[in-house]
Image (cartoon, rainbow, N blue to C red):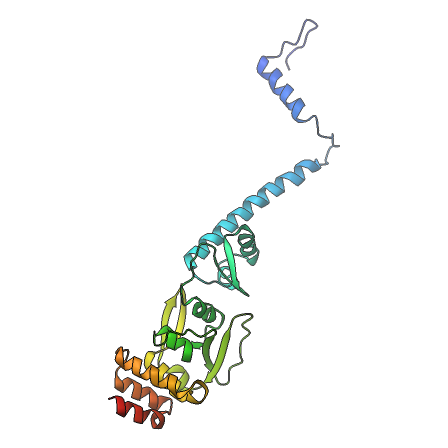
Length: 253
């Protein structure tokens, strides 16, 4: 202890200044009994640490989404320890955009012309893009369909796709599994029927889509050398459409 005499306070100047600052800082606090914690401190400090933790998780989520790229679903970052609440926080901050129900993309990500195919494959990963959508993807038509045509197994339950425009058709066996190619679109693996398989499928669905569309696709496919004639014939056998397509292949050969 430093003595305090009647002439004046003999404490060093640095101690006087420290005590004065403490008195000013504590002037608004209410004295608490021993064993009772001041409420102002208990309410303030957890909020600070909580905000720091949220910022860290949000930054981690943003970094992870940039690594994934393209279209993401909430379960993608959740599998890596990022809870959906941080996706909502990024959505509120404007760093994330909801492109469809349950599908998100980064705000600065520019969608490609095949963005809808990536969305469809993200929602239905076991589906196969086919018919009109596959025709447009292979650049065999100038008219992109307003909905994504997707093939699923004949016995499979149709998935819920929310507000996505997807038209399902049912294939089975080799007609579903043969002639399927995988392309990365916006970081999403998209399964698409090959060019030859797409043309043969159009002949098989000629009663619904029209024979003219199938003939135009066949001519463009051969003119642009998208696939050889024997590949078309192979998928005609797989899809049991050889009787239908035979006269047109003979005429164009």
